[in-house]
Image (cartoon, rainbow, N blue to C red; front, top):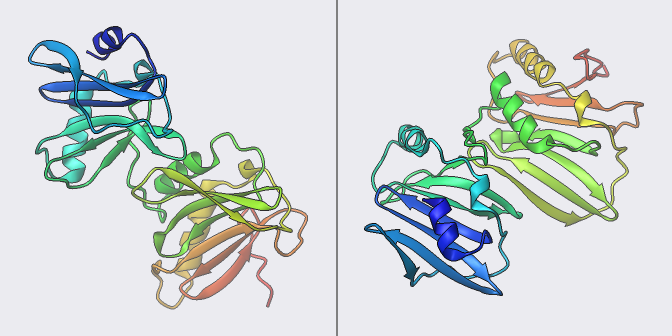
Length: 258
């Protein structure tokens, strides 16, 4: 159906795709104007649409794997606890990044999928699997970062990259894809290769630190920062767990000053 809509539109310059059980549409850009083609009741035609081109990311809809859309709907229904009026959209989410999303009507939980149809999971950053997925999302292909961390109250995992006098922060929140924010700020933190930070060591260190605290449980307020803020030759892991602060090497060795 996407191929037929592309053929009818005569272009791959898409800004939105919508697919439901009985209809499909493709919004494209021609010049600086958006036009929507839809398949309805066996016919493809131009339709009125609220979709406008306001500079959002243009993409080739054929690059997105919808070969098992029924499986995507099933996964989304399980997570959202609803399959009412399901619709898949391919559209820019944020920061020039396009995702596939499945929504319901009435609206429940939006479920995100990557270009290859893999699920953007609801990650638990107290688990190894959650840390691994978030790590892959925030680090991507970055070779140098100035800080890496996990925010309090499961606020998400982040990396900071200094660009001249600004800091670009990439954050992966537990229920959402990555987003970036920029703030004007200089940094004295030395850049390091994020590959030095190992999710396995983060998870085992967190478990060990939690076990030795008075409550012996991982409190909601735990956090982690990895940086060279103490001017060490290599970055260190600065944990706060149940109100207690600890400093560890990247190998998980406790070097907390006493």
